[in-house]
Image 1: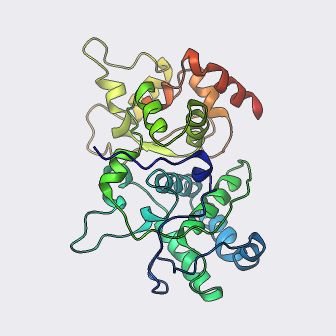
Image 2: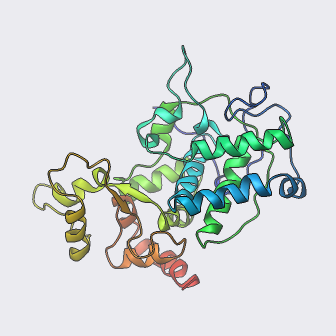
Length: 302
Protein backbone atom coordinates (compact mmCIF):
# COMPACT_ATOMS: atom_id res chain seq x y z
CA UNK A 1 0.00 0.00 0.00
CA UNK A 2 1.21 3.51 -0.79
CA UNK A 3 1.13 5.60 2.34
CA UNK A 4 0.29 9.29 2.06
CA UNK A 5 3.13 11.77 2.30
CA UNK A 6 3.16 13.18 5.86
CA UNK A 7 1.88 16.71 6.20
CA UNK A 8 1.42 18.88 9.25
CA UNK A 9 -1.43 20.98 10.58
CA UNK A 10 0.06 24.26 9.37
CA UNK A 11 -0.08 22.92 5.81
CA UNK A 12 -3.74 21.99 6.16
CA UNK A 13 -4.73 25.45 7.38
CA UNK A 14 -2.75 27.15 4.64
CA UNK A 15 0.79 27.50 5.94
CA UNK A 16 2.60 25.51 3.26
CA UNK A 17 4.37 27.67 0.71
CA UNK A 18 5.88 24.86 -1.33
CA UNK A 19 4.61 22.22 -3.68
CA UNK A 20 5.02 20.99 -7.25
CA UNK A 21 5.88 23.40 -10.01
CA UNK A 22 3.02 23.93 -12.41
CA UNK A 23 3.05 24.16 -16.17
CA UNK A 24 4.18 27.54 -17.51
CA UNK A 25 1.44 27.75 -20.07
CA UNK A 26 -0.66 30.71 -19.02
CA UNK A 27 -4.20 30.03 -17.89
CA UNK A 28 -5.48 26.59 -18.67
CA UNK A 29 -7.98 25.93 -15.93
CA UNK A 30 -6.01 25.69 -12.71
CA UNK A 31 -2.40 25.34 -13.79
CA UNK A 32 -0.17 28.14 -12.52
CA UNK A 33 3.23 29.15 -13.76
CA UNK A 34 6.70 28.59 -12.38
CA UNK A 35 6.68 32.26 -11.39
CA UNK A 36 4.24 31.50 -8.55
CA UNK A 37 6.71 32.64 -5.91
CA UNK A 38 5.94 34.14 -2.51
CA UNK A 39 3.28 36.81 -2.82
CA UNK A 40 2.92 39.50 -0.17
CA UNK A 41 -0.45 39.80 1.54
CA UNK A 42 -0.58 43.50 0.56
CA UNK A 43 -0.35 42.60 -3.13
CA UNK A 44 -3.01 39.92 -2.85
CA UNK A 45 -5.48 42.17 -1.11
CA UNK A 46 -4.97 44.82 -3.80
CA UNK A 47 -5.32 42.39 -6.70
CA UNK A 48 -7.94 39.97 -5.43
CA UNK A 49 -10.78 41.77 -3.57
CA UNK A 50 -13.34 41.56 -6.37
CA UNK A 51 -12.31 38.22 -7.86
CA UNK A 52 -11.83 36.35 -4.58
CA UNK A 53 -13.86 37.84 -1.74
CA UNK A 54 -16.71 39.26 -3.80
CA UNK A 55 -17.04 36.22 -6.05
CA UNK A 56 -17.08 33.82 -3.12
CA UNK A 57 -19.63 36.03 -1.37
CA UNK A 58 -21.80 36.28 -4.48
CA UNK A 59 -21.69 32.52 -5.04
CA UNK A 60 -22.58 31.92 -1.39
CA UNK A 61 -25.61 34.19 -1.62
CA UNK A 62 -26.91 32.20 -4.58
CA UNK A 63 -26.05 28.85 -3.02
CA UNK A 64 -25.57 28.71 0.78
CA UNK A 65 -23.83 25.34 0.44
CA UNK A 66 -20.85 26.92 -1.37
CA UNK A 67 -18.82 27.72 1.80
CA UNK A 68 -18.90 24.07 2.84
CA UNK A 69 -18.07 22.97 -0.71
CA UNK A 70 -14.98 25.21 -0.87
CA UNK A 71 -13.78 24.16 2.58
CA UNK A 72 -14.16 20.49 1.68
CA UNK A 73 -12.39 21.03 -1.65
CA UNK A 74 -9.45 22.64 0.14
CA UNK A 75 -9.30 19.85 2.72
CA UNK A 76 -9.36 17.11 0.08
CA UNK A 77 -6.57 18.93 -1.75
CA UNK A 78 -4.36 19.30 1.31
CA UNK A 79 -4.77 15.74 2.57
CA UNK A 80 -3.12 14.33 -0.56
CA UNK A 81 0.55 15.36 -0.67
CA UNK A 82 -0.14 18.83 0.72
CA UNK A 83 -1.97 21.95 -0.45
CA UNK A 84 -0.80 21.97 -4.06
CA UNK A 85 -3.99 22.30 -6.11
CA UNK A 86 -3.69 18.73 -7.39
CA UNK A 87 -7.38 18.04 -6.69
CA UNK A 88 -8.26 20.64 -9.35
CA UNK A 89 -6.49 18.86 -12.22
CA UNK A 90 -8.43 17.07 -14.95
CA UNK A 91 -7.43 13.74 -16.40
CA UNK A 92 -5.39 13.27 -19.57
CA UNK A 93 -4.86 10.47 -22.05
CA UNK A 94 -2.14 7.94 -21.20
CA UNK A 95 -2.10 9.15 -17.58
CA UNK A 96 -3.60 7.45 -14.51
CA UNK A 97 -6.95 8.80 -13.24
CA UNK A 98 -6.62 12.09 -11.32
CA UNK A 99 -7.80 12.81 -7.77
CA UNK A 100 -11.13 14.06 -9.14
CA UNK A 101 -11.93 10.49 -10.21
CA UNK A 102 -11.37 8.97 -6.77
CA UNK A 103 -14.60 7.77 -5.07
CA UNK A 104 -14.20 10.15 -2.09
CA UNK A 105 -13.92 13.08 -4.52
CA UNK A 106 -16.77 12.34 -6.94
CA UNK A 107 -19.11 14.68 -5.05
CA UNK A 108 -16.63 17.57 -4.70
CA UNK A 109 -17.93 20.95 -5.86
CA UNK A 110 -16.55 24.44 -6.40
CA UNK A 111 -14.23 23.75 -9.33
CA UNK A 112 -15.91 26.24 -11.65
CA UNK A 113 -15.76 28.98 -9.02
CA UNK A 114 -12.02 28.48 -8.53
CA UNK A 115 -11.49 28.48 -12.31
CA UNK A 116 -13.53 31.68 -12.57
CA UNK A 117 -11.42 33.42 -9.92
CA UNK A 118 -8.25 32.23 -11.63
CA UNK A 119 -9.46 33.52 -15.00
CA UNK A 120 -10.07 37.01 -13.59
CA UNK A 121 -6.73 37.02 -11.75
CA UNK A 122 -4.88 36.24 -14.96
CA UNK A 123 -6.14 39.58 -16.29
CA UNK A 124 -4.69 41.55 -13.36
CA UNK A 125 -1.54 39.53 -12.66
CA UNK A 126 -0.76 36.94 -15.36
CA UNK A 127 1.17 33.80 -14.40
CA UNK A 128 1.53 34.92 -10.79
CA UNK A 129 -1.10 33.55 -8.41
CA UNK A 130 -1.36 29.77 -8.16
CA UNK A 131 -4.62 27.88 -7.98
CA UNK A 132 -3.43 26.29 -4.74
CA UNK A 133 -3.27 29.78 -3.19
CA UNK A 134 -6.65 30.72 -4.65
CA UNK A 135 -8.21 27.59 -3.15
CA UNK A 136 -6.63 28.17 0.29
CA UNK A 137 -7.74 31.82 0.36
CA UNK A 138 -11.22 31.05 -0.95
CA UNK A 139 -11.73 28.38 1.71
CA UNK A 140 -10.77 30.91 4.37
CA UNK A 141 -13.22 33.47 2.95
CA UNK A 142 -15.93 30.80 2.85
CA UNK A 143 -15.48 30.00 6.54
CA UNK A 144 -15.62 33.70 7.44
CA UNK A 145 -18.79 34.16 5.39
CA UNK A 146 -20.33 31.22 7.27
CA UNK A 147 -19.68 33.00 10.58
CA UNK A 148 -16.43 31.24 11.41
CA UNK A 149 -13.03 32.60 12.45
CA UNK A 150 -10.59 34.52 10.27
CA UNK A 151 -6.93 33.61 9.98
CA UNK A 152 -3.84 34.66 8.07
CA UNK A 153 -3.10 32.52 5.01
CA UNK A 154 0.55 32.59 3.92
CA UNK A 155 0.83 32.50 0.15
CA UNK A 156 3.31 31.30 -2.45
CA UNK A 157 2.25 27.72 -3.10
CA UNK A 158 3.15 26.21 -6.46
CA UNK A 159 0.58 24.14 -8.31
CA UNK A 160 1.16 20.44 -8.77
CA UNK A 161 1.26 18.82 -12.18
CA UNK A 162 0.67 15.41 -10.61
CA UNK A 163 -2.73 14.08 -9.51
CA UNK A 164 -3.50 10.51 -8.51
CA UNK A 165 -6.84 8.92 -7.67
CA UNK A 166 -5.00 6.08 -5.91
CA UNK A 167 -3.24 8.50 -3.59
CA UNK A 168 -6.55 10.19 -2.82
CA UNK A 169 -8.16 6.87 -1.86
CA UNK A 170 -5.36 5.85 0.52
CA UNK A 171 -4.89 9.36 1.96
CA UNK A 172 -8.41 10.55 2.76
CA UNK A 173 -10.27 9.31 5.86
CA UNK A 174 -13.54 7.52 5.16
CA UNK A 175 -16.94 8.35 6.71
CA UNK A 176 -17.20 4.83 8.18
CA UNK A 177 -13.80 4.92 9.92
CA UNK A 178 -13.60 3.87 13.55
CA UNK A 179 -11.80 6.01 16.12
CA UNK A 180 -8.68 3.85 15.80
CA UNK A 181 -8.69 4.13 12.00
CA UNK A 182 -9.14 7.90 12.17
CA UNK A 183 -6.26 8.28 14.60
CA UNK A 184 -4.03 6.09 12.42
CA UNK A 185 -4.93 8.06 9.31
CA UNK A 186 -4.14 11.41 10.92
CA UNK A 187 -0.96 9.97 12.41
CA UNK A 188 0.17 9.05 8.87
CA UNK A 189 -0.22 12.72 8.04
CA UNK A 190 1.84 13.78 11.04
CA UNK A 191 -1.07 15.06 13.10
CA UNK A 192 -2.10 14.43 16.67
CA UNK A 193 -5.45 13.43 18.15
CA UNK A 194 -6.03 17.05 19.20
CA UNK A 195 -5.52 18.22 15.62
CA UNK A 196 -7.82 15.47 14.33
CA UNK A 197 -10.63 16.64 16.62
CA UNK A 198 -10.11 20.29 15.70
CA UNK A 199 -10.13 19.60 11.95
CA UNK A 200 -13.24 17.43 12.30
CA UNK A 201 -15.00 20.60 13.38
CA UNK A 202 -15.11 21.56 9.70
CA UNK A 203 -18.25 19.39 9.66
CA UNK A 204 -19.98 22.29 11.36
CA UNK A 205 -21.14 23.08 7.82
CA UNK A 206 -21.81 20.84 4.87
CA UNK A 207 -23.96 17.92 3.79
CA UNK A 208 -23.67 14.19 3.18
CA UNK A 209 -25.72 11.86 1.03
CA UNK A 210 -28.17 9.29 2.38
CA UNK A 211 -26.08 6.46 0.95
CA UNK A 212 -23.30 7.46 3.37
CA UNK A 213 -25.41 6.75 6.46
CA UNK A 214 -27.66 3.95 5.15
CA UNK A 215 -25.75 1.23 7.00
CA UNK A 216 -26.03 3.13 10.28
CA UNK A 217 -29.80 3.22 9.87
CA UNK A 218 -30.63 -0.22 8.46
CA UNK A 219 -27.62 -2.54 8.55
CA UNK A 220 -25.51 -1.72 11.59
CA UNK A 221 -24.61 -5.28 12.62
CA UNK A 222 -26.05 -8.78 12.97
CA UNK A 223 -27.94 -8.01 16.18
CA UNK A 224 -28.97 -4.36 15.75
CA UNK A 225 -30.45 -2.72 12.70
CA UNK A 226 -29.68 0.86 13.79
CA UNK A 227 -26.49 2.21 15.31
CA UNK A 228 -27.29 2.60 19.03
CA UNK A 229 -25.00 5.64 19.30
CA UNK A 230 -27.53 7.59 17.20
CA UNK A 231 -30.08 9.62 19.12
CA UNK A 232 -33.33 7.64 18.66
CA UNK A 233 -35.39 10.66 17.57
CA UNK A 234 -32.63 11.72 15.21
CA UNK A 235 -32.48 8.19 13.77
CA UNK A 236 -36.24 8.26 13.14
CA UNK A 237 -35.89 11.60 11.34
CA UNK A 238 -33.05 10.27 9.20
CA UNK A 239 -35.12 7.22 8.26
CA UNK A 240 -37.91 9.50 7.11
CA UNK A 241 -35.46 11.40 4.90
CA UNK A 242 -33.69 8.24 3.73
CA UNK A 243 -36.22 5.42 3.24
CA UNK A 244 -34.93 1.85 3.33
CA UNK A 245 -35.79 1.34 -0.32
CA UNK A 246 -35.19 4.41 -2.40
CA UNK A 247 -33.73 4.89 -5.87
CA UNK A 248 -32.22 8.28 -5.07
CA UNK A 249 -30.11 7.63 -1.96
CA UNK A 250 -27.21 9.34 -3.72
CA UNK A 251 -29.26 12.47 -4.32
CA UNK A 252 -30.88 13.14 -0.94
CA UNK A 253 -28.67 15.42 1.15
CA UNK A 254 -28.46 15.53 4.95
CA UNK A 255 -26.83 18.31 7.01
CA UNK A 256 -23.74 17.28 8.95
CA UNK A 257 -24.92 19.64 11.69
CA UNK A 258 -28.71 19.30 12.02
CA UNK A 259 -28.99 22.30 14.38
CA UNK A 260 -27.04 25.08 12.60
CA UNK A 261 -26.24 23.57 9.17
CA UNK A 262 -25.09 26.81 7.48
CA UNK A 263 -23.28 28.41 10.43
CA UNK A 264 -19.64 27.68 11.21
CA UNK A 265 -19.78 27.35 14.99
CA UNK A 266 -19.10 24.85 17.77
CA UNK A 267 -22.55 23.25 17.68
CA UNK A 268 -20.96 20.27 15.90
CA UNK A 269 -19.18 19.28 19.11
CA UNK A 270 -22.28 19.81 21.23
CA UNK A 271 -24.27 17.62 18.83
CA UNK A 272 -21.92 14.71 19.49
CA UNK A 273 -22.83 14.85 23.17
CA UNK A 274 -26.47 14.23 22.18
CA UNK A 275 -25.91 11.48 19.61
CA UNK A 276 -26.43 13.82 16.67
CA UNK A 277 -23.27 12.99 14.76
CA UNK A 278 -24.33 12.12 11.21
CA UNK A 279 -21.30 10.11 10.12
CA UNK A 280 -19.72 7.22 11.99
CA UNK A 281 -16.42 9.09 11.81
CA UNK A 282 -18.07 12.03 13.59
CA UNK A 283 -19.81 10.18 16.39
CA UNK A 284 -16.79 8.01 17.23
CA UNK A 285 -15.03 11.17 18.37
CA UNK A 286 -17.33 11.01 21.37
CA UNK A 287 -15.24 8.92 23.73
CA UNK A 288 -13.74 9.45 27.15
CA UNK A 289 -10.25 10.06 25.85
CA UNK A 290 -11.32 12.95 23.62
CA UNK A 291 -13.96 14.42 25.95
CA UNK A 292 -11.85 17.25 27.35
CA UNK A 293 -10.92 18.50 23.85
CA UNK A 294 -14.55 18.48 22.74
CA UNK A 295 -15.70 20.25 25.88
CA UNK A 296 -13.04 22.90 25.48
CA UNK A 297 -13.97 23.52 21.84
CA UNK A 298 -17.72 23.49 22.54
CA UNK A 299 -17.32 26.11 25.26
CA UNK A 300 -15.16 28.52 23.26
CA UNK A 301 -18.01 30.08 21.25
CA UNK A 302 -21.71 30.03 22.24
